[in-house]
Amino acid sequence: MKTRSITQVSLRDEIEIHDPLQVVSRYLESWRFEAGDASSSFDESDLRLANRGGARISAVEIAAILERRRTIELALQAIAPGASLAGTGRLVPWLPLRELFDAFADIRGIGLSKMTKALHPKRPALVPMLDSVVHTYLAVDDLGADALFGERAIALVRGYKRDLDLNRRALRATRRELMRRGHDLTEVRILDLLIWSARVAG
Amino acid sequence: MVERAHQLRAEVAKLGFSGSEVDANVRARLYWNPKVPTLAIGHEALADEVHTLLNDSRLSASQAAQLEREYFPPRRPT
Image (cartoon, rainbow over the protein chains, first blue to last red):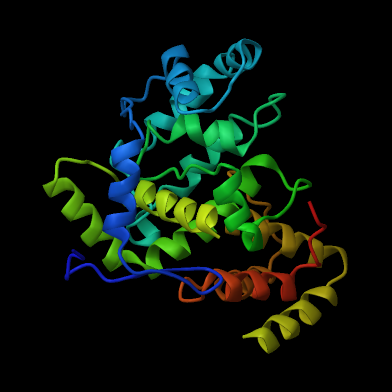
């Protein structure tokens, strides 16, 4: 039965998800969501966790990323573990987020998908998973491959935030209901899953 | 807003090389580049106006993207 207090979620291309709670609950039944640690440390275990989530980061790529470890950790230190993209725009730590993305620039084989799969568990309310499905969904916000890596990532996250803001009430209510049922998912993760469901169904 | 974007585009274009500095400044602020290019005295207000117009959080994703495309030269396809 649809939970009354949860309104529908409106996605791009006039896609409406009438029962977001049900959609996300289905994913939770079939997928395993492994929580990461939201500390500011960043090591091989974070990349292994991303791989268990399907990131496919090779050993060579792991080594290349870990050469940037200090820069990544400095950027993470500047972002509170609970920092959220769902809040007021002014409160989003955009500058350190850009620095965090910049830390992954120009690593052979590492694109937005692998980077965000590694970073999402570190700051789950802030970093969406920009995998191919979500990236395609955000196409209108894509500056293209010629843009700087960090600039391109920020542009996509800015576009993503517009969808979060548009659906703030419904996502917050869905999150509350999921928490009541024992699942701690952020609004960002919920929106990821809803975009996934819409794209896969479409 | 689109009309204003065109007006600002024309105004910035008149500045010649300084216009590209205004664009670089706006772009850096829009995408949170840690290094924001400094501007010649007198160009800050114009850059601020462009930034405010393009950074309007009330716009939908497609409206915001359209406005950016109106102001900045068309993006190349990926």
